[in-house]
Image (cartoon, rainbow, N blue to C red):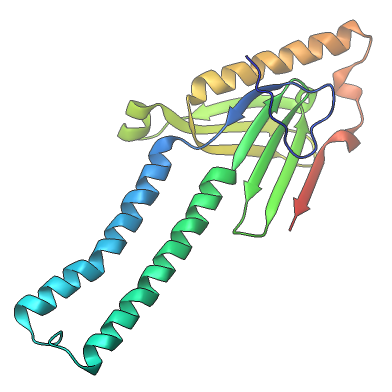
Length: 197
């Protein structure tokens, strides 16, 4: 069932068919990494208390507490940035286009769109034990337009996604041919590539 949410640049006649996000395992790796980083000061404090007398009070203890606080602020900031990149990187497959929204940092976003009838090939790749076991991989959309290739990395169910995209492309081309429009002769100016900062 199509989603009812909107995205930047959605046209009135477009229906959202698929929303492509990175697999949950990708975010789990980010959480695991920052959890380990956040535990390092606790481990260092424990080792200092057990084997040294650096935390016995005084100015050095205050400086170490201040440095620990600054460290946690940086960890939270970088975690927040990683979450923003994970959450706002999204691919949207509509009844008319493929839209790739890529978040680059906190204040930069690239939005690229490609008409379905421009798609020439769709490939899916799964490499490694965990991607095979957890069913995530890469989907590449090949075109002859101004953007030669759309790549959606680490998305769930790449084989089903590529199959669905190919079905939508064939359906769109058949509709255009039924209306007397040759999709291979259409102008390329409908493909868009915009950047919002």
